[in-house]
Amino acid sequence: QVQLVESGGGLVQAGGSLRLSCVASGRTFSSYAMGWFRQAPGKECEFVATISSSGENAYYADSVKGRFTISRDNAKNMVFLQMNTLKPEDTAVYYCAASVRNMGAGYPDEYDYWGQGTQVTVSS
Image 1: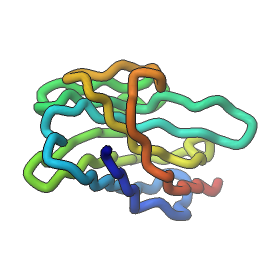
Image 2: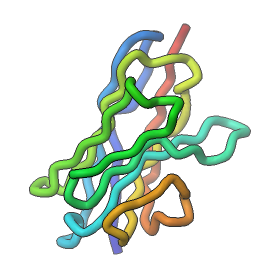
Image 3: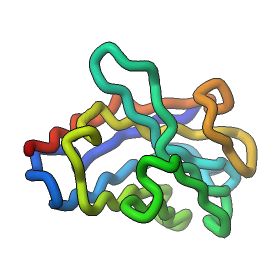
């Protein structure tokens, strides 16, 4: 099993930045694709970004492209989400997720392990 723990959420004003971190347990982290998803109240789980196991390839939802950057440090079993130019509509619980595949997609069903989430609130 894989345990994922997110951190870095909080309250920020619109236009500000936050950096989310996710640390994973296990010795096979470097083989997992990683992703970030978010869920606002009353909304379905929304894909944010994913990164391949090597960190070579990354893909983003159109809503965050150009503002958010996903990265990983396999030596530290960590994945990050740098969020810039935050908007109130970015407010959600953000979840880190791992896929046993080398490259994940934008579908929650393709991810096998999930963190508990971290709250991001962006005020106007």
